[in-house]
Amino acid sequence: MRHFRLLVAGNALSAFGSYLNMVSLNVFIYQLTGSALSVGVFLAVRLLATVVAGFVSGALVSRYDGKRLLMGSDLVQAVALSGTFLVPGGARLVAVYAFAVVTGACSTLSQITLRSSIPEMVGAELRAAANGLVVTGRSLAMVAGFSSAGVLTAAFGYSAALLVDAATFAVSALVLSLLPLRTRADATTEGTTGKGVTEAPVPTTPALLRALPVIAAMIAVRAVDGLGSSSHNVALPIHSAALDAAHPAAFISQFWATWAMGNIVAQQVCGRFTRKTGRAPGERAFALGACVMSAAFILVFSGLPTLPAVCAALLAGMADGFTEIAYVTRLQEAPDQWRGRVFGLSAVAENTGFGLGMLVSATLLESYSPLEVVGAFHGLAIALCVALLAWLVPAGRRASRPPGAIADTRAADRTVHGSRVEGTSS
View 1 (cartoon, rainbow, N blue to C red):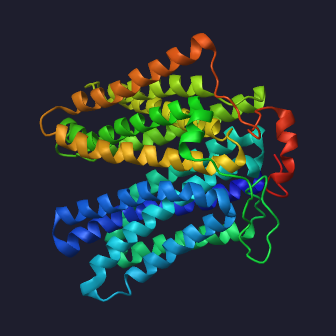
View 2 (tube, rainbow, N blue to C red):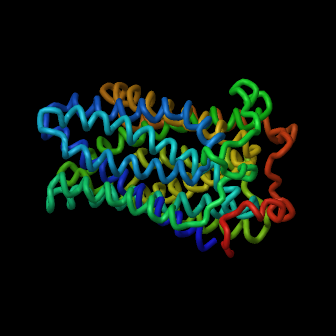
């Protein structure tokens, strides 16, 4: 998977830019306006754009060439970032809010496109390992982006930091342009339009949910997971300050660094498992992993000493990474012409859950402790996962696969081999 690893490196670089500008732009807006409300509006606009883009992106991925969508997303963000500082000072705040819309929409489109295209890039057999590489790359990018944003901004200023952001997107687009990617199994030969439009019908959302009931249930679980994720993100600074008021950022840094290490471990374990058995983790593994993840996050806030709490964060990172890989790999079994719509619906559910959770958990933390809020949100996720397992296990249910679904076998992998990244080797 040599070419795919280069794609992952480019994707991680653009993710680094995304996390970097999340911090830099937030501080920039606050200094520009002196208003915390303005920062909140920026975050709300960005989140709303990710939700709305989920409805549109699925249809775009089902119709257009994935490589062009990925490159376009990176280039649009690079141009938008660069242009933000060419706007006169009075209109700069408006330009920053416009960029919030652009980056929110483009990040969602990029994520849906990549997730949908992986089976055709590497083959059915290797998709779990490929998903693991993507998870690891983005986890490292998150830690690097958040940790370096303050240093880079303090040393060189906001303009330099955001121009670095723009450069990461431009480099990612350049890497994509050089890779011989095939992103669709049924892509038509590009004609005069150059759009690579597929003639396969794309189902409506209700029809899709009826055809893939277990996947629909997994998406529902993922939405509730978004609630839990938002609760520990909002509660973490409060909990860290309570542990050490003199150094409130210390535990946050330890938590995210350890969490990222857990993600890397999960990628290694999943990669070895799939290579050894030829099987990818399914919906039962997803539900079990989500239970462990939520329980570990609750433990982090339970008042444990630092070392056990960090160990709980490691376990949370491992379970989080494993759950992400199992979830994405399972959804990738949908037929190629359906896959974009599936991941678009998933993005809407995840981002809506996360955004709603941010609002509700922030409100609840005014009256309740971090443990109570995180326990309630992640406890709800555990309950839903247990219900999913109770439905799956007795009847041995598995989502019905419509014609064209990916078979998770070596034979299926050989069948789609011609649709992979050209020239790849494992």
